[in-house]
Amino acid sequence: MNPALSDSLSALPILLPLAGALTCILLPPRHRAAAGLLTSALTLLSASALTWMLLTTGISSQNLGGWPPPLGIQLRFDGLACVFLLLTSLVGLPVGLHAAALFRSQPGDDRASSPPLFWPLWLFLWAALNGIFISHDLFNLYVLLEIMGLAAVSLAILSGRPAALLAGLRYFLAALVGSMLYLLGVALVYGAAGSLDLGLLGEALPAGAISVRVAFALIITGLLIKTAVFPLHFWLPEAHSAAPAPVSAILSALVIKASFYVFLRLWVDVFDGSVTFAAGQAVGALGAVAVVWGSYQALRQSRLKRMVAHSTVGQVGYMFLLFPLITLDPAAAAAAHGPPTWLGHAWTGGIYQALSHGFAKAAMFLAVGIFILAVGNDEKRSVTNMVGRLPMTTFAFALAGISLIGLPPSGGFVAKWMLLKATFSSQQWWWAPMIVWGSFLTAGYVFMILRLAFAPAAEAPKKNLRPVPRILEFTALALGVGAILIGLRASEVMLLLDVGAPFAEPVQPLTEPPGGADD
Image (cartoon, rainbow, N blue to C red; front, side, top):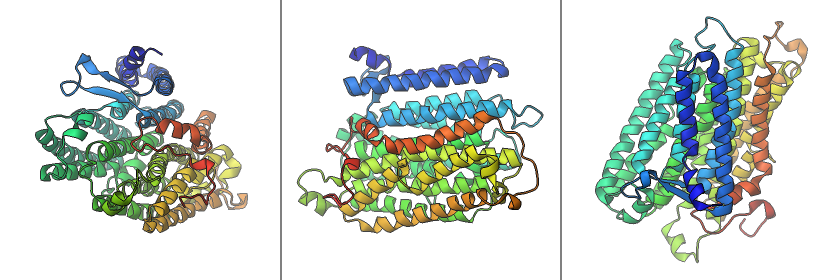
């Protein structure tokens, strides 16, 4: 493959959904779904082509306008960017199919039934997501985070209902505060280094300088708000539960992954000289509390969508257990001969949690949306005997639940197993009880729903279900199957993650027995 061709294709995942969004604005509303789905398919093809190029030619980059950093903006495509681009495309296409079928099946006066702005907003958001994953400029990331946030808030209030508007306002204010903190940190970074390119910043920032420490704190706090990490998650349950089901799937499965991705990039590539062991432990503590608190709150909810929304808070907490595991104690770093093997395990586990959660949570929100559409209400008791009436949707919910709990052979199992392995290998055993406790709490609310779904028909409400288009069930099931397949195909995902990984030693966890030398 010609490297010049690879470089020129790097911007396609941004340009395609951006062109699709502009096209959808110009088209009549009845043609927007077709244009949006075509754009979704092309964007998936472009991400797949770039993945193949990555495996054949290695890391590629493109300087926008032909200007190299620090004057220009660089797009960089490595293994980490690759897996997040694929996640967005593989989740975005089924969710788009679901949304098109859902809105087409509900014509009428309800403003939530056929929102004409869904496709332009979703494609603008998709373009911003892909831009975040491949952009290598700190200020450009701020711009893309703003575009993504505005589109996400607009999608969250599509129904126009008072509850959605109030939740959207809270979401907007939280995103605004997070953006302002991030921008202040960017200004301090530019003043200290005179550059905004991530690669140059890693070398130019004076390690340990007070201005850099303050910039680090501001940027990280802003990103924690956007990712809804406990106790900064106050906006998420209402925003995700009040939105239409396809929007909830997008917000939970994809949008919060963007700020996590930026957090991870900056932690490893930019601020590695300023990150302290205490900072890693502090972030890990927030994640550990989020695991337990979010899962416990999900267990207490009486409404389906609020249960799944609170579950997101808990599952996001697992991703932040990555940071204390990759931030070495100075004494351990001095005594180590080369990079410890657990760094690769932690890196893989944290990213795998983000990927598996994307598939599982999208499937769960779509499945719950189908339940609500069929029975006409959001009460947990309404799913009684659902296995006999909507077996495919119940199966999709169960597959998503298996991954969230961390049962084999799902992607969630790979993630939690790798995190546990890194926890014990690094002798940070205090994270292990939180991981296990969170899994038990997750099992509590998942099996609570499944117990109701498998209840005898005599206990089911005596009312007919509304008809549900079969395509809605297929899309939810496809995402649930994806949450399992990502665990079965772990070797291919890890092969991608190894390209440009910050930890040189490759990880092959599934080829080692559970009692390997690192345990």
